[in-house]
Image 1: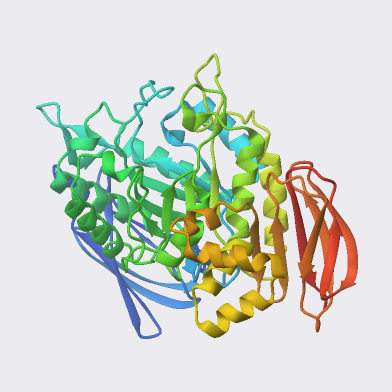
Image 2: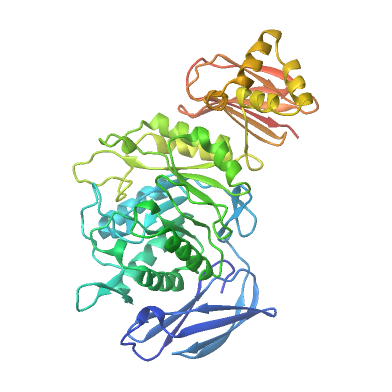
Length: 510
């Protein structure tokens, strides 16, 4: 047994004829006076398994009871990995405290493809910059998703309906192989538990069958260290009420002894990430100007833009943004201390599109996303969004008289009339939010200014006078990182080349 790695107990017992999904088997693990009880599962042909994810090193005593009985004693040696990921403030960290910055991609039907295509996808992932993949448990029926998988999650009963009490063991074995392969690459598996794009009947099984499925799923998968739970893709389009979604949220959380990240993905109505069991917001939007709104609404929790449209050339609007725009959306998010997820949808004669099935990547954005990841992971902490000029001004002139006067004093005289008119405008908020410029900081240690599509030729920074900074100019598309000054402090003007996709990064020295 090793800390942060799944430990599995396998026992033989009577062959079950029914109720495979909720087999009567459980184990109690005791470590330094603390106990954890985990349910086991039936794996077919009289085989029962219990899985456990030890979070601390040391000696564990375990007892299995129910349909099978066993006991043992294991020494858990210290970890060689960082452990499962947890939400940590507005960011994420591994269990050992090491920061984790999600740079994700989407391959919805990854596990429902042929072995040859799955192997090709993993070869691509091994060389790609992504450390999180969104994928579905159930197959998907949608454009470019018309193939039949080899196996399904359950067997059918005599009436031809899915029998969630009888899981298909071949499906789950293959599914778990995919999770292990992702883990071997250091990739988090963001599992989409339900979705509306269905022709097989998984979207309308009924609430009790949904819970039976989730019971078996959590018994088998909760001990995987690289699991995240996404309750749904576009939950509003599924055949479930809000009350049923709340029940599903509680069920998954209560049946996960390890507290893996938990979210719910929207199409229109953002799921309330303030709910105590939800660990982070998973949002579909192209309107990244609203990032500060969601960060304020879900104060203290991470915000992930898990769907911001896809780099590609297909007809639907959601699948036809340029590689440059995809990269810009990543930088807009990370500059604000939020996160973004990639997807790719280029037409292909074989109908293998990355967002749907995987295969190979054709787009220009992944290499640039890798450059972004390298820069962000080099910083000494979690970025926090810093309002640009107009939002700061609007906030100041709406505050106390003292703050309003101070704001006006800081402006040239010709801006006073502008500021006073802005304060009275009924459209002031939308006007201020439309200012293009994405600024972030880490205390006074780091200042990041991403200028997006603005082809400016200079950028004036207001740095603390009592610290010195190394200033770098980043070309996020051409992937260049040039140091232009050292020992800078106070008001400092940086020359820029007058083209789009430029950023300025100031990092404190010493």
